[in-house]
Amino acid sequence: MALFDLILPVFILVILILSKAIKIVNEYERVVIFRLGRLSGVKGPGLFFIIPVVDTVVKIDLRVITIDVPKQNVITRDNVTVDVDAVVYYKVVDPSSAVNEVENYKYATSNLSQTTLRDVIGQIELDELLSKREEVNRNIQEMLDESTDPWGIKVTGVTLKDVKIDDTMLRAIAKQAEAEREKRARIILSEGEYIAAEKMKQAAQLYQDMPAGLKLRELQTIAEVAREKNLIVISSSMEIGEVAAMSRAFADKKKV
Image (cartoon, rainbow, N blue to C red; front, top):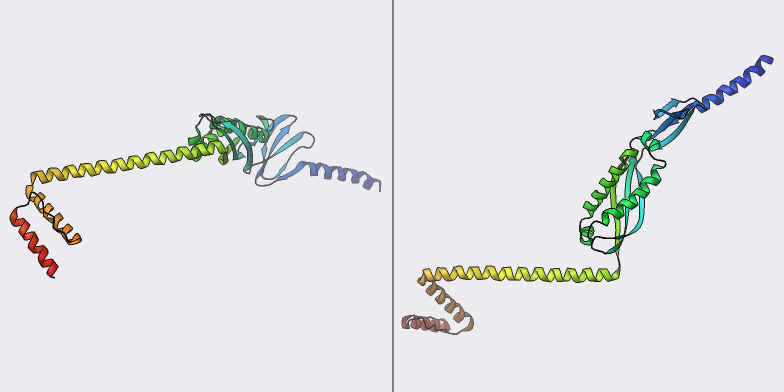
């Protein structure tokens, strides 16, 4: 009985030590181990052992984390004030650096995302922001990724959610777009007139080189007008025989 009383506390102590020594982490998790304050290594996934009291652990999630960057009031390079918000996606690729190089990597990455968003948009004009979102997203991602690399963080994507402009600026943009469309319409019209003039110039040159062709074209035009309007049009350049032939042709048509 005395032996049992001695073994029981020892058994309970062993159970408690094992419960503290045995650790299990999921596939998407890693544990950074510090032994007496010094970095011992990174463990996981699965089952592993630590030394209770001597070892301390910090668990890190390796899954992609989403940051909803709140609206930022930014002045673009052309002095337009816009409200922009974004979504940033990142994940931890080096658990040891995420623990040792920065106090709170989530808080640091979130604040860095806000400042980087303002910096990038402040260097571009409004037209670029509205028309080149993919390029802006890529620039923000590259800057964030470069800044967070020492922390063991990989920024996998950045997406601008919304760009809000006040009503006064929206009206100005609409007027600018309308003026741009009118300018393009005038350019297209002038280009068409230029091409038509070039073709007429070429046709005139051909008729000058081939007078017979001009005569045939003139007769064809007269015939078309007479057929449509029931009129006989006489050109000053036509000879008497030609006028008589046209008269007979028109008279025969009316008989039919």
